[in-house]
Image (cartoon, rainbow, N blue to C red; front, side, top):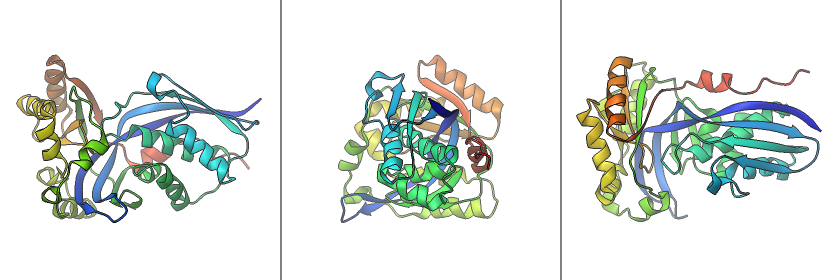
Length: 299
């Protein structure tokens, strides 16, 4: 017997900036980043049940197991005695993984927020973010969505005003890169200060256009040096007319921002013709993220 079922999008993200400040005593790296949700998304069907079972079917074979973060998210709510009953989840993957776009973390956040809504848990956002931090570094950001300054190892999320609406060309180089491999290869010389992040945050808070010349990623140079297909894909985007290309997260996925759809579409088509896996999408505001959540139960 079932109680409720909804479809929920799990938005991808890009890092408008990513500054790796150094290594912490707990082994994680200290980060500061401006993150932004985008319209590329996975889709979940979430159905609550009266029994206690948690199941998830995924259309990507290697993710169809109990180690999937969506299963862990639902079971975490059960373990905290916040979720009574169980849940049946179906997950359609569209966000490339691994790719630096946060697909798994977004899926987990979608489960946390959707189940909180469906069950009328009335949890403050800070509580959902704390639960999300137990599942993964990027999950707290996805609980909020939109534009945010993220610090620590990802657990500290400071909401920002929505960035100006932008079209985005997303391109995935033909290479797989693990986050652990990227961070394990960093040296002290690879660390940076947060000047670009500070500049971008200042512009956003002042309502100014996004300073595209200050978009940056500490990890970019290391990744492009160790994995040449990433640099080759960047060069293809620039040759196609992209004014700036940056890597998201630990890669390998790249993004190019545009104000004009015409310009974005031209680069998108040119990149596709070069047999590069490419998407044309746009930024997603915090209001859009909230609006995509299930309606609160009637009282």
